[in-house]
Length: 257
Image (cartoon, rainbow, N blue to C red; front, side, top):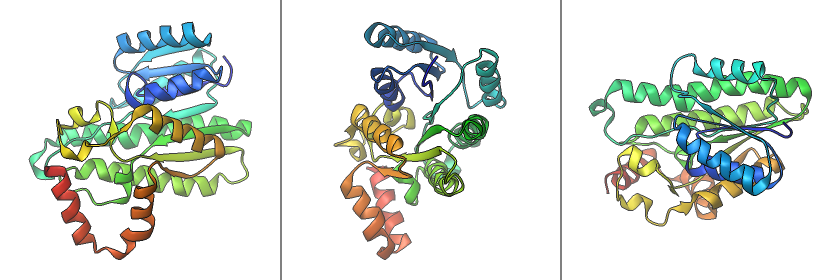
C-alpha cells in the first residue's frame, strides 16, 4: 500500500467523501466504521473507479480498547499509515441532566478518547519517519458554548485545543495536524443527534465541499480550517466582543428551533 490513509467513520458523510478525494489522487485507504456493509460498497466503488488498494475494518471505536486493537491489527498486517483522518463522531440533543449519562460517556469515548489514542499511536510512527498528515474532524461548535448539546460542543472544543497545541509541538518534524471546523453539514448527523428537521440545518453545506476544503487545508499544513468565511468572521472577529451569556442564549435558541 502507498500513501495510505486511515479514515474513521468512513461509511458515510464527510468520512466517505474524504475517502473518495484521497482515492481520486491514486492513494490507498484503510476504511473503518461500524457498518461493514456500507464500507464494502464504498470499497468496491473506489477500487473500480480509481484502481487503488482499499482495506476495510469493522470497528466500533467507542468501545474501550478498540483504538489499540485497530492499531495492532494494522501493524500486524504490515500496513503503513501516512494520513490519519480522525473523523468518527456523533452528537446528541437535549439538556445535559435530561440525557442518559452513558450516551454522553460514549460520545466522549468516541469524539475524544478514540481520537486522542489514534493520534498518539499513529502520530508517533509518522513523527519517527519524519512525514505524515493528520486531519481531525472538529466543528465550529468547538469555539462556542453549547447549551442543549453541551457534551458535543465540549468534545469539539477539546479537538480544537488539542490540535492547536500539538501543531506547535510538531514544528519541524515533518508531521502536520489540521482541525476541520465546519458549520452545519448535510449528513446523517442531524438525524442521529435528534435534530430531525431543525432549522439549524437549513442551508447546510454538502459533505463533499466540506471534505474538499478540509483535505486541501491538510495538504497545505493549515492548523485550523473554518470552512465558511462568515463563520470565520463571526468566531475570529465578532465573538470576542459578545458576552458569553448572550452567545449561550443565541445557541440555545438555535438548538431548540
